[in-house]
Image (cartoon, rainbow, N blue to C red; front, side, top):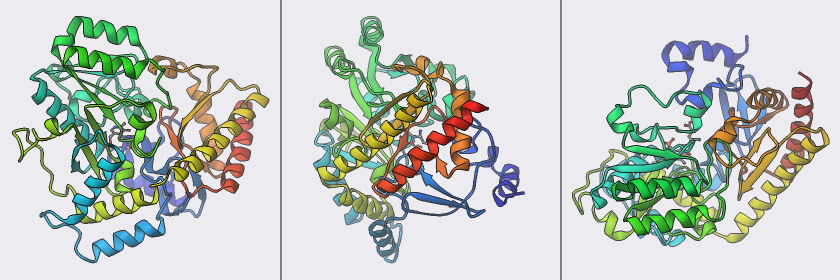
Length: 428
Ligand code: KE4
């Protein structure tokens, strides 16, 4: 028995499903999840000594790869001065000012400890500001595990095929409407019927929780126009896309100014950080400036702030993003070429260094179309790729990432191994 298998046996006795986040359990792709011993750069090493080129990148935070020296030094330096004060520190102000410089629509920001907290708080602000209760989300989009978001959610909920989630009161789920992503007509219909009751629309600008689905050109401008017309607020959930798809996130890439933005992942560089922010008039509603309550013991802690500052400092130039996008484009093109040569129907896409692959002719424009892709072949391909030292997200309903630690040689190796793995998967 491998060390990973032995650890997984022990883990299942004390951790639900043996993991601390469902998608890590490999339920959608089969097999036993590997347990990590260490990670550096673009690679993970498991407890059995196997090494993998990593395209999960901790589900998005690690745009610089694992344990980048500059971020490690910043964490060490901050920790040596104490790692939580329960009182304000300068690093929180510096990171907030940096976020505002990179995302001007975020005039004011509050740090929390996860993307889930950020989206929960952002919706609370929107409901307080509009005095309305309804929110509109999109099928397959995942905004964390807050009760109101577990309605036709993506990521692990989609991966495990859960009918949303038990434990969410009907009264709460009933305040969340959901229509297909990219479906302008469906959005117009909801606004026509319920526009006066809508507090906010919350959307993943590029969807990363049902695989990778880019927005169609008219989609976000329509959301912006309808929100303005009906007095609803537009929330861009940029937990995954923020500082990933462009220096200023998806809102810069798409050219839309949301009223509120939620962030996470990259702004903590792998330490637990989430954030919500946006228009000053809205954020001044948040306690203690205003009456909307939200709080957090470890929010803005100095080590997480230091890791976020060091990470964003290393991604501060357009050249950084251009080089990352070029490398991702080469990877994605190489995978698509392999599929074409093997006559395997495949749809690939990327925005910046966020990318995804569906085993289907495509196009894949929404959750229903993503669900209709060949997830069985994907699972087989994932297993074959893993055996060849390439770690893809263990679900067809997740996006993958490239970091600045992935070299051209890593990309070449990956294309070669994924090509061979596709051949093996097809043959099964
Ligand atoms: P966290 O609470 O996991 O920090 O963030 C929730 C969240 C909110 N919004 C978006 C757009 C997100 O992608 C996420 C979390 N992403 C998933 C990956 N698909 C986290 C991975 C996991 O659940 O283990």
